[in-house]
Image 1: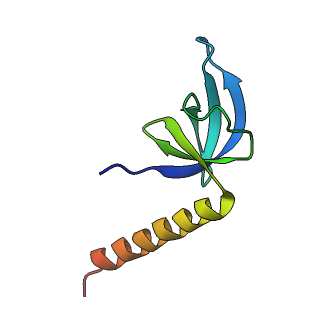
Image 2: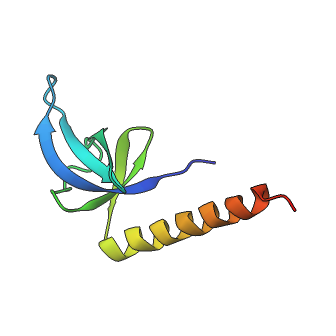
Amino acid sequence: MCLGIPGEILSIQPNALGMHMGQVSFGGIVKEICLAYTPEAQVGNYVIVHVGFAISVVDEDEAEKTFAYLREIADLSELETEQP
């Protein structure tokens, strides 16, 4: 199973090979992401990222839903690690 995480594009610039790369924020953690598969993506857009590549553009509402699910998963994992 693959997991894609949404992130917000902060900036876009070409790399040495001319491919579009973006600085993408994942809840405050910023990574350089390849935007070759999402040429329509613009600064401020949210993209789904898998292994360093943006694979689709999503709207902010969809990204927020995913963030909510991820927070729920984190909350559940904290419950599993608590011992009586």
